[in-house]
Length: 200
Image (cartoon, rainbow, N blue to C red; front, side, top):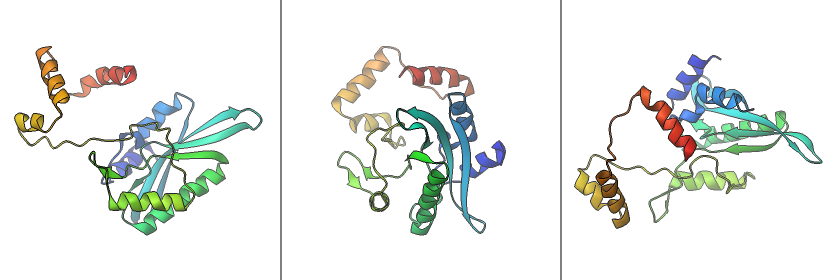
């Protein structure tokens, strides 16, 4: 499979992840990882896909061992499809065994809860229980951001600010007074974005 074909597959998912694109594998290969791509299908129906990063590390006494990592993945066409989940999670386990890996870390982008109250998502809770029941262990060591905040920006600015905490409103207004402005970005901004990301 080539770069174009893989990226087309990744873009076909309802939730596309930048860290599952071919190019992310190329970036990580510059830092000692080996990237490989896997696709799960039933007939012509695409169920899921995963960019799997592999790294060999030395552990005293045990020697060299392999660690596998799927950033923001695996991806799945329909997280509600219990059979697809079973196929993909069992497939991942088989890959880890075949590669003699001591660890396979996944980061499926599945909603577990909403808002500060932590209302549990039905599918998220189901998947979490399923993984626990199949001996997957939750890790407190997160690599990517643990939470994603989604803000509906169709409201006007005053409504958006009214929905924020007082300290947040203060900081937004302070930034404006200090000359911070917002504009639509272009491809020319990637270098700046990357340097900010690397710094933080």
